[in-house]
Image (cartoon, rainbow, N blue to C red; front, top):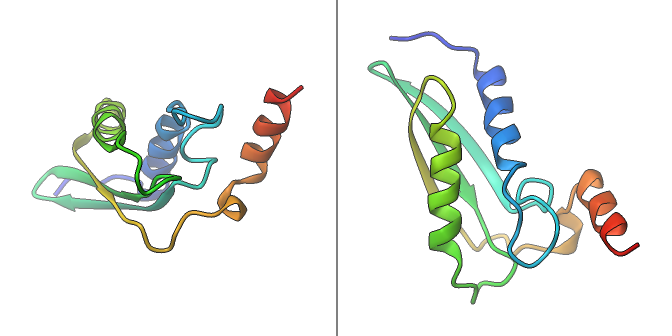
Length: 111
């Protein structure tokens, strides 16, 4: 089984997620708080990244475009072979889930 540094790889995944902006707000999906969980597994030399995320509006029909973009970005990381994205709607997304960096980006976009 291939060895890897899980924390380092998770940071690389987060860095990639921070390059993907929400369709409605000028904030990346990570700082917006849409990413609920990142799980990294190593099975028979295949590193698999599983991401649970949500959308701001449960009636949003952009899940397919988000899924494709996330998979493309995460699988561009060396050693990542598989990326799966699952949309979950519990807990429901709230403004309090935006990170401090995300709030700053939102403030800056309004000036």
